[in-house]
Image (cartoon, rainbow, N blue to C red; front, side):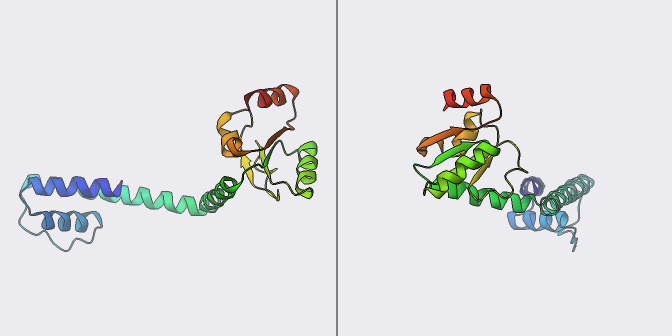
Length: 176
């Protein structure tokens, strides 16, 4: 968004007859509110354009800054980085077993498989349940193809449907 404002400002100043370098310089000093000086005497139209760039530019910068702070404060950055790491781990697997459901049965099956030396990926809808799972995890609805693909279904050797309902387990089995 900041880049878009910079491009729009630069184009606007180019249309007013500035050189490319002067147009970029004027836009950047305006958007960043450094405000050294105008490079030349502005007409009323150029002044209104500059006011527009200031309002839109500052609003965009503040909005972008607010989003960045929100990501850090909400822990979304940590979650995003953790998810990317988890996705890379899952993408390395082949012949693994996908265990759908981290309830009593899913947990027991996953632990038995791991004890026997099998790689396991756990899928569950509840992110809180997956907090301390010692295997790669995917938070999502196991009845959705996209969730199973995220768990590496194409490369998996097996799938265990250990969800709470029989209908869900049947649906997961048929869709896999």
